[in-house]
Length: 553
Image (cartoon, rainbow, N blue to C red):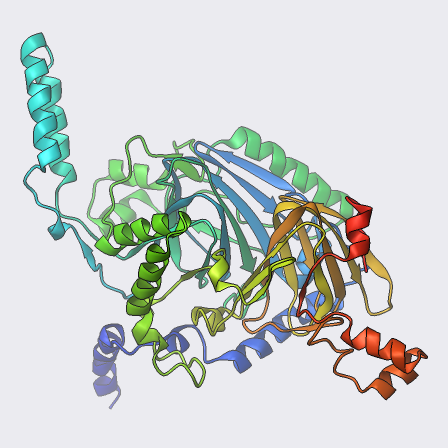
């Protein structure tokens, strides 16, 4: 019987990989109940150590330079509230033609595209290489033929570079050879990108401006079976490549760790790529290549760092709808009604299958493992959930809009406040809030369970602020407005406003308000009904008279 069962295992595994109904729940978890329990168990020790008496709006504490970009890290050991929340935040700046090398991490990731656009490659285990170069003709294109004829004419005139031109032709021919790879995805400013733990990815900036990404890594998530330290496993290059700058920051960080007696440190930027530890001969046999190739694979002589520059434009297979989507996006940004209608029509066609049957709640069946929808744009004003023409807008992204968030137990929110506008005083019921400020300035106050201010300061672009679960907060924009993206540690995060149309105060009977606060009935009515707006409030007349001051009301 044992022999019979053993013989069936390869067949069962093959059927698992080939089955089109393998869902997210089967691969990364069984739903919210198990995830929340695991998060509570794994984070209990961290939470017991949390004494959050003073919050800070912080700049990154570590900076790592690479050939074609910079990586900046907010380290939990330097910002205690990050450790209490069980997260690490990293900001990547990638220059044009910059390639962030393939790697994976031990925690799920949610990323906001602050600026620029690019290409994302995600390799999901067991999924086929559905992108093939068969769509490209191996014959030279019209532009190639014209360029070669022009080159030939110049060669005949000069008569001295025919050999070099022949080498270039041969290289062009090799570039047109057949290639296969998994799906690549284009992204742009305002996109939220969600990725599970342990899935390898690479990012390329194919735009004309710097690409800036801010990512939250949830190391306290059920998908991380290691400790709370973030670990990056590189498949290529040498993350320590530009060691001078990185080494100085690491030494400063280690000295700080020793000074405060903190055990352990973030490991996301330490070590070489994972192949460097294996034996050369063993790797050569495993890949079927020579040892010279293996030495390149290990990247021990590579000093470019984790973000490298591509000398020529990266040539990857790009599906036709990406170029069509780009055209529609351009029409949309120019305000064309026709362009917006076309974009909505395209989105409807693209996601029709996923939306059908979702009215009763997402169950994971509509998205199989190899057809994951990993991104959604939250900068588009038309997608706003709350809009006040005098105050601003709020756009939330949860697991109902992007089902993969259900299995990461993460979500996001984008808020745009106009000059002197207010985000209603509120507390978040079931999640920590990690705010990254993308533009403008404003004043924020945060109050703990003892009614004591733990944060009262001005925030600016590029800073990060952690607001713990249930802490009350109010935010007012400055004279230039205030914009930020919030990463939330629950896929269905909820807030309870203290003022406005749907506030906790408005939900109470007048008699309860009168007796709780010792005020008259008229005062209770004003307290309940003076703000008819939802959560984004228009500037008050007092704030307008005060001009640039940040008054909290």
